[in-house]
Length: 213
Image (cartoon, rainbow, N blue to C red; front, side):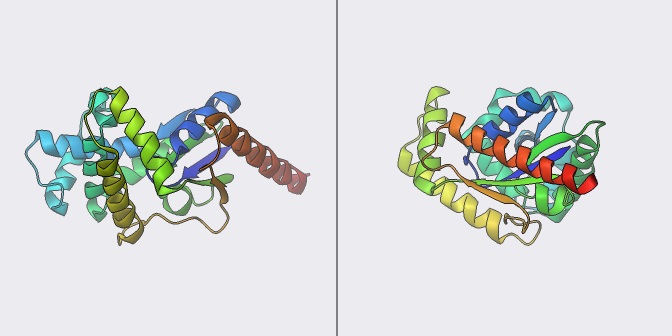
């Protein structure tokens, strides 16, 4: 079973993906971390994240970089959004993501183009979203807990700019797949959002099983 979980920044898709992984016993890949790693590697190498050729040079980052706590910072998130617009960067990371999805037994991937580009034939597709204010409040709380001194206004502005880039980029823009189920968790707790996701997955898999019977 392959589950694709897409949605904008700070929508809660990562929390849902991890919860689904635990519930169904499937490996989970936060594909956004790959782009954050590229952005961080570009910065470490002194490369321009807005230059497609230079950003592509950073796709050869060491696997150990994926364990860096700094990847979760707001700054790295902004870098990820900048490098992810480049065709060369996305192409370099495409096969890595598809290999993860092809594991025996299946997998769960969360990102922005999973159900539309990475695994368009996923068994279940979810599109997780929330209002900008709700997402900003969550991201601000996370950054504060890490000791980052960012104002809520700064976070709102950063998310709005990232949404604009993600939705309007030429390569694999953020969009809800036609066959994806929408979960708007603006007024949901994390537990309620996960329950909704599990109900959708169970129902979808039941339909698949009925068709195969």
